[in-house]
Every structure is written in C-alpha cells, then in structure tokens.
Length: 303
Image (tube, rainbow, N blue to C red):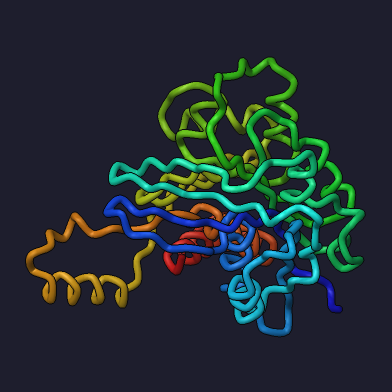
C-alpha cells in the first residue's frame, strides 16, 4: 500500500431523529468518516485517505460500501469483540443535538474510538498527516503526542464537545491540549468553554497564547476565522454554498409552496469535521492559510 495522505479516527453509527420526527438509520458518524470525506475531495485518486477505528461484527455493510465507494482506505477498521458503537442523534430546530448511546459502553470504548497507532497497519503508522477529534478534558493529549512522534508533517486537532467548566489559562492541561498538535480547530462554543467568552478574535488570541501554531475557529453558517500564530496572519472565510444547492432549494420551495422556506429541515451533522479534513489537506499541500481555509469551507459545503 502506498503512503497515506491522511489518517483520521473514530466511527459511530448514527441513527438520526430530525425535528419533524423523520428518521435516518445506520448513517456513518463519529467524525472520522466526515473528516475523511472532506480530505478526499482534494485528494487525487492515486492517493489514499485512511480511516482508523474499532468496529464490531455488526458494522453495517452499507457503511463499509460507502467508504469504499468514496475511495477511503478501510484497512484501519479493526474488528472488536464488542459491538459497533451506535447512538441516537436527536436534532432540534434551534440547532441543539442530543446523543443517546444505543450500546453498553465497555472498558475498551476509548481504544475503539481512537485505536492506538501501534495496533494499526504499517502504512497508518507513517501517514503524512493525522486528524483527531478529542475531549476537552485533555485525556487524549498522550494520543496526540503519539501521532506527532511518527514524524507526521501535520497533526490536526479538534474538540468534539464543549468543556463543562472554563479552565484558567495557567492550568497545564489546557496548555497541553491546545499545543499538542500543529492545528487546533474548535467551534465558537467549544473555544469559549475552554478560554472564556469573548469575540471571535479574542478567542483566537487566547488559543494562540496557549501554544497553538494554527488556530481555525469554526463559526457554522458564518464560515471560519483562520489564524497563524507566528506571523499574526488572519483570514475570515465565509461558508460556501454551491449554486446547484441554491437552485435545488428554490425548485423545492416552488414545488412545495405550502412549506415556508425557513422551515426546511437541514442536517448540519459532520460539517465541522468535513471542514477540518479539507483544511488539513489544503494546509499540508500549500502552507497558504487562505487557500486552506477555502478548501475547508468548500469541503463543508459538500457535506
């Protein structure tokens, strides 16, 4: 197998409940598949993106088929004795999301989410880049360090939930988390939960002070702010929406004139992860902050 352009981690099979009661069952979630897709958008067919996770024998065939159809390498999906991690994702109109686990969480859950690098196939241990979603408590810092120790060109880190309490900037675990990778990418809520409330630029400044080399603040429908600590370079990039998507929405509303245009159900799950995959590939290939942010935003628009 050729050298992998990127390896990303974590699979959870999502069963989604939309605000109007509709459901979508057995969808790929957990952040890893979405990040891999975002990177694959910018990766030539002769290059590979790898996905690493522990899965059970019950892993849906349709999920594996989708990954393979996307050209994502699945040799890093290692079969566990435990069942595949699976959860309800309950979406609300105001953007809130509630996750309810559908499986018993065993002692090996963390290894299933983030399979230790030494247990993965050799090409996964020498990838050019890695992306990892982590808990804001800092419990994953050693795992991030294990990725950097491979000699990877870039290690990208995002937090996948907000912190339960704001940490003072003097606390070592906050310094360790923010500076562990090369890129640190929270959304605004997650950033504020780590370093306290403030404007977008204030949040970026505080994270840069904590040792992040590149800070990418994801802002949902507003796009992102990307900042380079060594030079102070900062770019604001909007969220991209394709002309085709806008055309489809207009046609939908014309055909369903009894439905208000602002009442349509949109599933935002995974857009942030997809952005991170596009940004990481863009940063490694170009070292151009603006281009990387644009690549990330374009990837997210496809999601």
